[in-house]
Amino acid sequence: MNDFLTEARARGFLHQVTDEAALSARLQAGPVTAYIGFDCTADSLHVGHLLSIMLLRLFQKHGHRPIVLVGGGTTKVGDPSGKDEARQLLTEEIIEGNKAGIRRSFNSFVDFNDGRALMLDNAEWLDRLGYIAFLRDVGRHFSVNRMLSMDSVRLRLDRDQPLSFLEFNYMLLQSYDFLELHRRHGAALQMGGSDQWGNIVMGADLIRRMAGAEAFGLTTPLLTTASGAKMGKTAAGAVWLNPDRLSPFDYWQFWRNAEDADVGRFLALFTDLPLAEVARLSALQGAEINAAKKLLATEATALLHGHAAAEAAAETARRTFEEGIAADTLPTVTAALGTLLVEVSVAAGLASSKGEARRLVQGGGLRLNDDAVTDPLRVLRQDDLHDGAAKLSAGRKRHVLVRAG
Image (cartoon, rainbow, N blue to C red):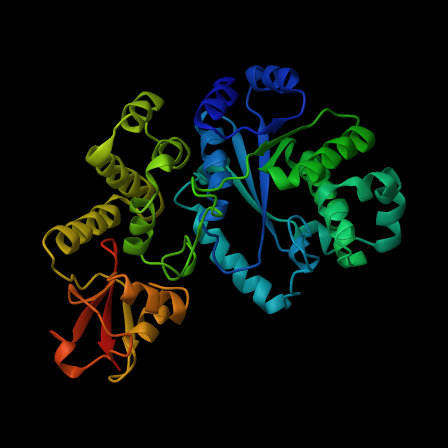
């Protein structure tokens, strides 16, 4: 069971750990319960959350019990960590809808059968808190001086950006979550992204003060691509996990389009492949790296959508890019005849703006039915459609079907 820390470090999951020697001993002694919280700010999680999800999966693989904590309560407050301004407050109805979507994101990664993992909602205890009682019992253990030193607060204040009293309370509620999960389910470890370090440490301290018990924290590194882009963001927006937000084919394509320098890291973090195989694939050079990218795409997609969907996506890509066939399973957009192709390319997510689309045209990168578009004023015409659709491409790897509507 102690192998969790060893493999987590080898795969690149570890950034900071509180008292690693003591945590290692605790993990060696028997199964440990750990949790990660996910607020309900959208109806699906995205690839930016995947590092934490895969960490829970690895934790369970080594015989421990993970808790997925859905933030039905904390979403009503809003986490200021890493934000320059307050999050938009969501209604109860939107939060409830987002909860249902988020829960679906985990079923492929974590085994909840027979209590091997738990999915809980912090609204269960946060919604029932009495304000005065909470201040007297919990709030007295927090130093405002220390709270002001936390990155989530200090960075906002240093930039003279407002921080509401509502947001200022977030770290108290997150710490209280850790205490409640310790009391109710024996949780001894909270994990999360590096931006949560201060909140996690304060939660462990609250458990020591109020329960007289030892608790631990562990964070993952901030993950960016080799070019410095934020993980899980593309010109078309977030890379969603739920299939009603992003098709399995588009998800496969996201991983297939990984930068060469990222392939080894991504194989270690986002697949279950043995580390020896990851090392072999990471050493590939030149054209051979494409085989590793395809394997990365198929393995990552299989974890989320199943092997059948992953193989279908790989076959669609092969037919489209190697045989030149625009398969019906490509992502589809609808555009009226007479619409500028530069506008269609923006709507399809092939370009982030009309200016970028025009630059694609100037550089020969925008293609319609595999022919370069040379005129930025070119429009979609009836004779462009074959079997009711045309294939619009940006470069060699990104393609959509355009249907007239």
